[in-house]
Length: 266
Picture 1: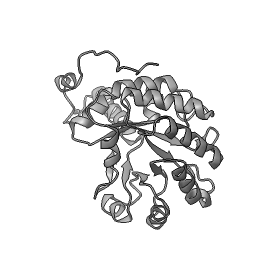
Picture 2: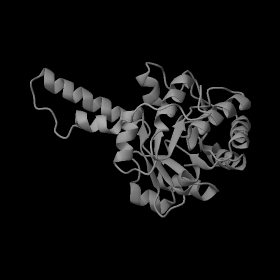
Picture 3: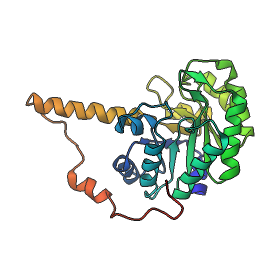
Picture 4: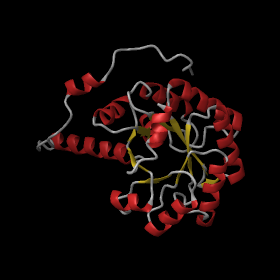
């Protein structure tokens, strides 16, 4: 899975990476023909009744990853800021995920309280992960635009993280075509952006050189919105929207219980 996932970032068209929040959502996306999936930290956290981006969902993230690793396509996992500030501890967690068959991780430099990590420290986290599990695709998330902080350091952070061994650079919140083009030009690794209805479409992003487009929490939020719409329709004796996935179809996506992969333990 590691080499397959890496190769998906070097094709003529960007990798469209939908983000799942549990096994069923991941299985549906795999069944739809997506080449790989990621996880949404918001979806994983919210489903467990916990806050996103607070570094408190390590156990939930690992449990979700173990289940999703059973899918027949590569999976990359959002590990927020690594759930620890110690390079060795972040590398330990990444190694556990790789042992489960996870192909990649997102590691962000945003910190609790809308702050940014010192780039040299973030580079040390990335280097520790790559030294421990060189096969794992590390997507270095740069939160300068997401948090609205220090846009001027974006290019420097992308370069530092690539030099530390990152395999990709993810700049969520970046939607201006000219700025996207400059980040791509400044990066030696594939650039990932977050899909935005206000930003460029797939064709333009392809022309700009973007290699991966993530949906982030969009699908999870859309699913919650759709569930509310159906509940309201039932309450008001209105028509339920058509096209809802059937019970039997979901059941067919769920495999028989299996033991955890060797080396894949909490």
